[in-house]
Image (cartoon, rainbow, N blue to C red):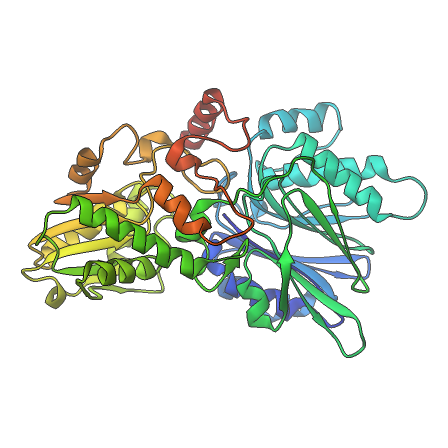
Length: 486
């Protein structure tokens, strides 16, 4: 999971890209980067850490040009501690291309060999984004004939990318002197949205970003999503040209975007994230009522912030008081994203504080968006007991995470997942809860897709073990796990 943005404007874009990355900071905090195009000259600044820490006034002054893109990273491949693996990535031919990517390629082993032995291209990092960039650059180079670059040549190159690359990828690239390209994998697993605004001169300005809140906050109108398998090319003078580049493309967005990753004020694939989380709460309330003994819940409490909508609906539907018992320190990163169990465990206490007045002598129902490794959940249950709770019931707005996620979320190891090979009572014991309630898989599907004319299915592999790209084998999962742990 990363956040990406690309902008074609009539004015300098450095501040617009910076502001967009601030809005997407929740999608990644390991590193960040901005690139701009001044004619055919690229300017790039990359650094570790969050957006506000990474860029100085001198950096912004160096980012000249009216076309730009940006990235916030949460590492799922490569080394999060190495600055050279921060995005964007650059190749100098053809023309000069800079690219950012959100997602995870699942055939990097094969592609790395092909790039070196067949395409004669060199990779300098372990990042799958560099792999994707070089595959695209190689395919574009093979299409160019004559002196000019035609959009059809770009679209053919993207079609070849779809043929070679497997996994999830929402991608934005700048081609020096020509324009900005955005494309999405044939399943639309990771989100990508187009926004636009009409200038008095009659020229259009466009922004492409991971979430719609970027457009709304910066004063653009949401135009539409980039369709699965589609490529969209925006010229330097604001002309948008689009083409479907993948046969049999289907929209199957990642369910975790709605459960946890996206900001609630975004709309993804026509579905309001906030309203989806409210519906998740409604379905969860029915399951809680079915499995929890009467009288075992005095109050409902969310783990701030992403579980708050679901918790409010659970409380309302059960007719139980809703209370805020955990105070969140907003200056600590997401524990889900932090590498290593020890770092996550330490961070929970820094991130949350339980207010004893809300817990003492009460039977508490704690609602969280999901339970992944169980580290955070166990610490939260312990905090509730130490604050004086009589009984602690824990409810997850998502189903049990039993399988690795290979499409852009850092869940590569089955052994790290608290629900892997455990029954629900065993998971409850592992996190120390008196009762544990999970959302049903079909309820989650219904809650998210309800009312959407375009989304009929979801990427739910970490819950079901069914991988939509069809190319994820047990051998591949073993390889991912081995490489992650080594």
